[in-house]
Image (tube, rainbow, N blue to C red; front, top):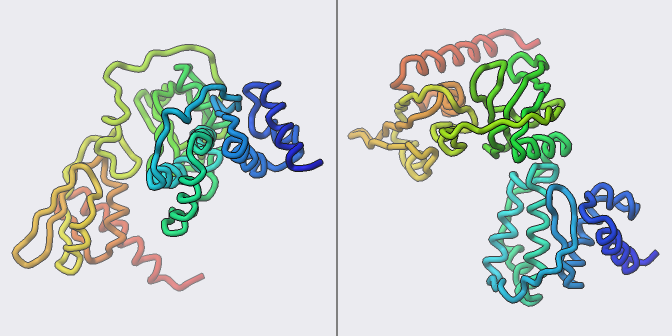
Amino acid sequence: MSKSTLIIDTIRIIRENPGITIDSLARELARSERTVYRWLAEICSDLKTRIYCEDGGYYIEDRDYSSVLDLTARELLAVRMSLKAPAFASNSPMSDAAHSSWMKIRAASHDAKLQNVDRLSAMHAVGAVPPSEVSADIAEALERATAQRHVIRVTYRSPRSEVVRPYRFRPYAVAFRRHSWYVVGHSTHHSKTITLKMARVHSVVDTGKEFEVPDEFSIEEYFKNSWEVWAGDEPVNVRIRFPKKLAAMMSETRRHPTQVIYPQPDGSIIFEVIVSGIEEIGTWIMGYGGDAEVLEPESLRQHVLEKAQGILALYAAPQK
C-alpha cells in the first residue's frame, strides 16, 4: 500500500471516528505512533486539511485559519521551540495539544516562511527532551478529574519511604515544575493541600463525586515561594554569603522572584530569598560546597551542616 493511500486512509479514519486517539489510529494503520504523527503534520501542511486534538482525541477541522494567521519566520520558530519544552514531552498532559497546535500553525502558514523556519532551526537549539516519565493513562485521568472537579482515589509512592499507599484526593490544578508534572489538591489523609508528582501515581479511580475548589486557592500563590517544587510550608527568609569569585555569576541570573543581592565591601555578596521550607534550597546550597555559607536561618545552617557531616562520613569510610 502506497504512502498516499495510507495518508488518505488516515483522513478517512479520523472523519469516520471523530475523537480517535493516536494509539488507536496507529493500530488501524498498522504503523508506529511516530509515523502517524509525521503523517498528520504532512496532511496539515501539504493537503491543507486541518486536524486538531482535544482531550486526547483527533478531529478534522473545517474552519480556515489562514486568513488571520500571519506569523513571521522568527515567530514561527519561537512557537516551534517553545513546543519542544519539557512540559510538552510525549506522554505529558499537554503533549497532544502541543502537537495539534503546531500542526494547525503549519497548515495556516506560508510554505516560504516554513522553509525559513527550517533554515533558522539549524542556528537555534533546544536541548533534547526525553519522553515524560508519566504514564499517558495516569496523566489523562488526573487532568480529566481536575477539569471535571471530581474526587479521586489514588495510590501513590512516597518519595521518602517508597511505600505505596491510597489517598482520597481533590485535584485543584496540574502544574509543570522543574522537570516534571505535578497535581496539587487536598488530601483527606493529610488534611491539607499537597503536591503529588504524577510519575509517582500508580493508579487513579474517579469516584464521580464533585467538589468545589476553595475560593482562596490560587496555583500561582501556592507556588509563589517555592524554590523549585515544594510549596505550602511556612515562608522562610534565607541569607547566604557567596565569595567574590562567585559574585558576578550569582548576580547575573534571577533564580527566584523574591531574590535580593547585597554587594559587600570585600567583593562578596549576600544572597537573600524567601522560600517555602529549607530542604530544597539546602540541596542547592550544598552544590556550591565551601563557597556558600548560610547566615540565616539557623535551622538551615544546621541542616546543611548535618548533610555535610553525612557526606564526610560516607567518603571517609573504606569503599565497599
